[in-house]
Amino acid sequence: MPQRSTRQTSAATMPAERYDAIVIGAGINGMYQLIRLRGLGLSVRVFDAAGDVGGTWYWNRYPGCRFDSESYTYIYSFSQELLDEWDWEELFSAQPDTLRYCQYVADKFDLRRDIQFNSRVRSARFDEAKDQWAIETEDGRKARCRYFITAVGPLSTPVMPKIEGIDSFEGESYHTGLWPHEPVDFKGKRVAVIGTGASAVQLIPVVAEAAKHLTVFQRRPNWCAPLHNGPIDAEEMKRIRARYREIFAKCRESEGGFMRVADPRKAVEVSPEEREALFERLYETPGFAIWLSNFRDTFTDETANKIITAFIARKIRERVRDPDVAEKLIPKDHGFGTRRVPMESGYYETYNRDNVKLVSLLETPIERITPKGLRVGGIDYEFDIIVYATGFDAMLGSYNRIDIRGIGGKSLKEKWAEGPRTFLGVQMADFPNLMMVIGPHTGASFCNMPRCGEENVDFVTDLIRFTEQKGYTRVQPRPEAESAWTNHVVQIADKLLITKTDSWFTGINRNIEARDKRMVLLYAGGAPRYRSKCEEVVAGGYADFQFS
Ligand SMILES: Cc1cc2nc3c(=O)[nH]c(=O)nc-3n(C[C@H](O)[C@H](O)[C@H](O)COP(=O)(O)OP(=O)(O)OC[C@H]3O[C@@H](n4cnc5c(N)ncnc54)[C@H](O)[C@@H]3O)c2cc1C
Image (cartoon, protein in one colour):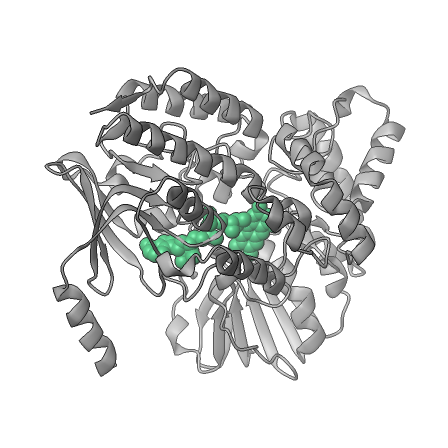
């Protein structure tokens, strides 16, 4: 502790460092942004609260954590050499492998020399007199730059539930998004998992294998579907490598940057036999096929959605032996695919084990955490370990944690109080030279990340290059361009059932104060349409922006 305070004092008294650009975040997008800005010849500093590169794959080390994207689609495409060198071992890579990939990229391109780790940025203020951003980290370090780029991640602010007595627990407790670097030993332990979202669904089958007993506390069930992971051997990797360009081209066609495009038919227009045949085939296909390759009306038409929903409910009933447990696992408040679909490997069968119990919090909410465990519905449960799989303050969390102030001291948090207002999810009026990568309202808000992330970073880089080449020191969107884009994002959202359901897609988070009103956080128009809009803006000579 004394060491830390010494460091704080010295950092706080140091003069501000100066860079052309500062990037927050050294995840998959921040790393690529660093590479591209170096290419412009700019001096760049990246700050990350983490101890190394990787972002999501640095923090989420819980057992079972892995891709839902096909590994070979979740890879940078900018370097042929990198594509030639890297081998994936599984169809859906596990977190340690993905983190290794990020570290490999950092080594290959010598990225760490421009990254300041263990540094959380707490504030960023625009200096109108100098057209510079003044950044300050939590330990008092100061830095200034012309371009301030946030690659802070869509799912990077873990959220704990608000439960009385949470600090009183005497056993071990962990959040999936802040998992320790040392392995957690579940062997012979009584374990509680709170939450049944995408992380929990990956973790639960693995913990059940090791633990003496596992109790899962579920507030709202999710519709999950089988991942069908498998190994990639050397021959298969060779074939994948030969097809990379074709794979990326296919991803470019799809709404979400995946290898999946919707079936052009409508569920309501084909026979029950044809529907059943497609559903069965997709349910057996690895990855998001059942979600993203389904009939095209599945996520826009309530009748079509009810059909696939009934199919998935039937699958759950077939897989879970106890009918009461199966009913608890079947969502009743939303249709299949209208929230992010967690992909699972033996999740439903886990509830057939003698050492696993499901407690529905809809019937009996958690009253409090006690020194020995949890009190639920008047019953005291005792545990050695509690795992909080309670997710993230999605899209907004990492922005709200930084005090970002633009022209006239205007706060970004206040500007977004009723929901984000952006131009292309990249910039905001009154916040000049601040660029977001994978911010709310980009076509990449829910996308196979490197596919859309690379395009987003390229757009930001080109905008900076244009600004530099023209000799301007300030760039921001015209207020009318921001309004038009924001209105378009809101209007288009209305077409999808996803935006009519409470979830992190719509900004609802019952563990966070005042987040019970739906907002439009994602661009529902799909990646190809978003890309066309960006191309149109570039072709129009960036007329939607004001430069000075
Ligand atoms: C468990 C899990 C599984 C996922 N699986 C997939 C998948 O299969 N496919 C897919 O496409 N996407 C997946 N995602 C989404 C994932 O977040 C993205 O794929 C991708 O990692 C985002 O990269 P990023 O660089 O934008 O952000 P991140 O990887 O989140 O990195 C952001 C970084 O910014 C840092 N940061 C934030 N705020 C500050 C601050 N104030 N100061 C300093 N540093 C800060 C964080 O520490 C973090 O390291 C998954 C997410 C999770 C949580």
